[in-house]
Length: 249
Image (cartoon, rainbow, N blue to C red; front, top):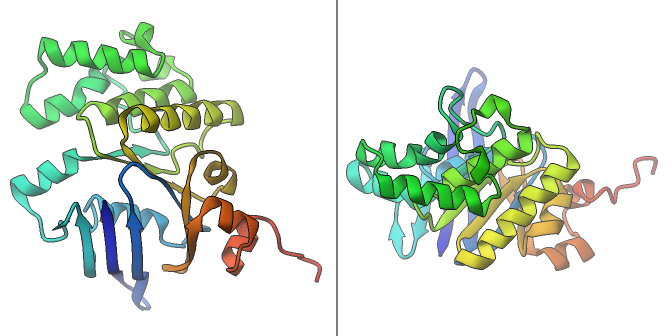
């Protein structure tokens, strides 16, 4: 379980201190598919970068399975990050490496080598995402949806407990988006991995998530089950995202 307690993140800017995150409190249960949604500048990407400690919070706690991870460093931090995989909007594949080598890259990063067992497992992961035959190809030879499926296989290589998807489908067409969302839902069902979906699209949340948190200007303005929030949005941000605002009123 991930518990985010009174999390704040501040940045120094030309006009003073900017509060990117302000007193964020969220609980994410094991095995959940949680949506974190908001408009541009709401703090979504900053929050996900704090969860995997690419950004250090200014204050507050991120407690994972009872351990406060915000103070981790060195080997403990590297061990924690292996438990938390990332899938990015721009796929993040290494263009000079084959599909198979991209999926194997986490093994190389973790141990400095790739074993025959690692390669066999990577092929199994490519099979899971329907791309085993693309193992010798290069990213430039794949469609955007195929590249994102390779990124998902790579994210699964170290058997993570959590997958963070930062606008993972925003660069894809609707058909590819649906394919990726179905794949993530199936992976969650089969493995029990917790999926955290960062997005500005309510349609993505509706299709895959069970619970949702709405951010606005770095604060949580609404949270609950997707069914409840969609049926009765209480925050202005959720109403705008659901397009339930009368712009001519």
